[in-house]
Length: 205
Image (spheres, one colour):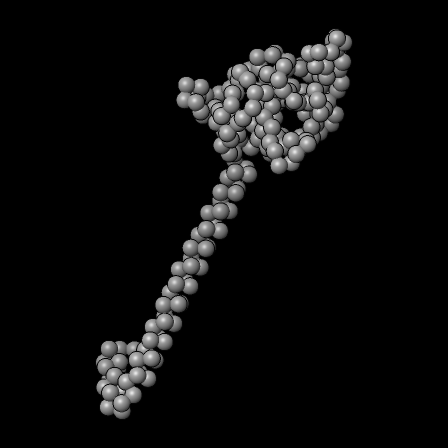
């Protein structure tokens, strides 16, 4: 609608003393346009939110995530409030190896994550004894499972208490410590030297 037509309608409304009707019509037309404009922008923002939400979900699910760790079970390798990066490609590609530090779902509480070191894979012979046991006992890790232990051998609840856990509970492999700054870098080897050799190499145990 051009300005000339609008002006003509305004003059006709004044002459016919129906100015109020003309103004109400214009107001209604303006409100409709405003509603369409706001609705369109809202849909646009919603679309971008869903799009970036999907990208973020894929990144966290298949690439990795930042994790703030708590508890003493991985000391001295990881201490309370350390921040690490946990990558998930190794888990999806089944490339988790003995000696890796992993984030896994707790076998007791699916809402809680645990951070432990992989000591044995399926088929490996592992020691199931705790330090207080006089006799050492061993078992073999069943298929599709891993054996996890904390580096702080004396203060860790791990596979020695609840047994091997399914590989599917692993969420990611801790590959980098980000905080504190003086500890930035890759993680050290197990201070307990408890990594089990393959079954073929442990027959003499």
